[in-house]
Image (cartoon, rainbow, N blue to C red; front, side):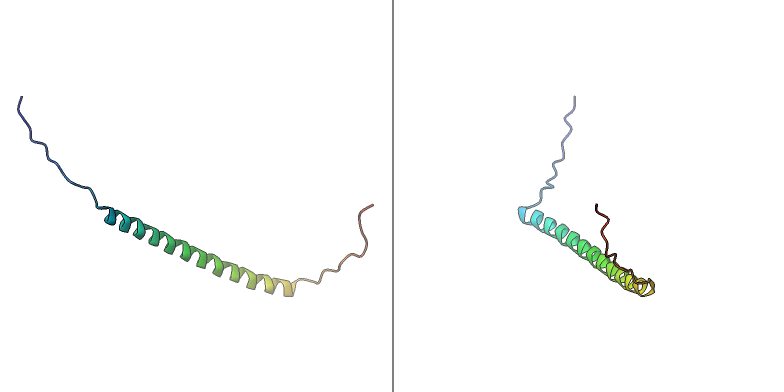
Length: 70
């Protein structure tokens, strides 16, 4: 048998680098969440504007004075 030398690679990151990597991922995810919330808010504002236009066109509903409870 022949002795085959093994390559040793040091791929460990320092604790500070790991914390920076986690912080970068968190920042990116918070940014994505913020963008989605802004899109959702814009969508709801547009829905409310359309609802107001629909309400103008709908006839006024009369309230019933009587009760259906026996």
